[in-house]
Image (tube, rainbow, N blue to C red; front, side, top):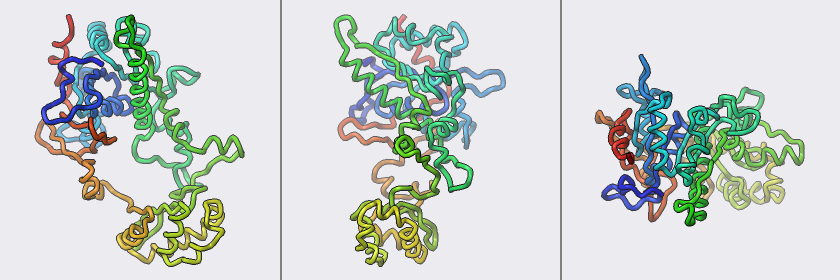
Length: 405
């Protein structure tokens, strides 16, 4: 890892797992920057390269202008770009590309999520960059990957979720598929990218020798659709073995019973009673000892065969009670149950607060914004929010002044 002074841990913050790691982020919007945010949360120095404002435009990462804005900047920006530095460079110019190459020469990791071939067109493909920095790890995030017949197609998370098999399953039977409401394909790709970077860092460490004092880097090729597909559990094996095409099932989990959403007097709850012993406790809690002791329902295959009967019994019980009553009874019986949270529920929940999953940041003009906390929790080298998201080009002068001449 790079051990420049910029990797020092701020006063009062415990040592961080990725302190000393220097990352250049060329990506925009969600997938690449989410990967950069995750590395930055654990102490990596992440230098985000943003384009200057075009005539009549705002400049910078387009995410700055997405969804709800405060004084012209998205509050989402405070999540996605916390702990990062912003440097404005125009990669369409020779000067901009030359400067970013010099930054990359001093970096451990480069993150990019351009269309495949874009960096090569600019003379910044991995073969070129690794000549002067053989330890460089390049995370490349794209819709379809760097190879294959679809590599040149534009790819967004919405398409990746459809191609990866997720979108078909989302929704009610017989109705059009729905999206989850957030860009899951981007986030899954980002997390796979972080895993790839950490694997490549371990491999680089193992390759250190006299000729490669930092070790050897490599390319981490992450495709959005593959990241989605990797999370599709039994989808392909069931088709391969039985010719079964899994279908949408609303709030239920086909083949695993009971697991569903159930109506209450004042809302809905989700209940996971699909463990053998959990099922017995659930049935006793709702007054259905007959189902709890039924030998046909002692294991999952038998419950799946009679899932409609089981769901009807649970629903009959829940719909006569308020959400809080259902939660109290089933939590006392050690049955997994939960309300369906809105943003307001999350903000008010004491468990989120106790786990430091809601943290405040303050924008340059003084607005306090609550943002999600750090995941995962490390006991000795925890992550931290050490600085707010940067204004466009806020760190250009400071970063470029450190470049070796």
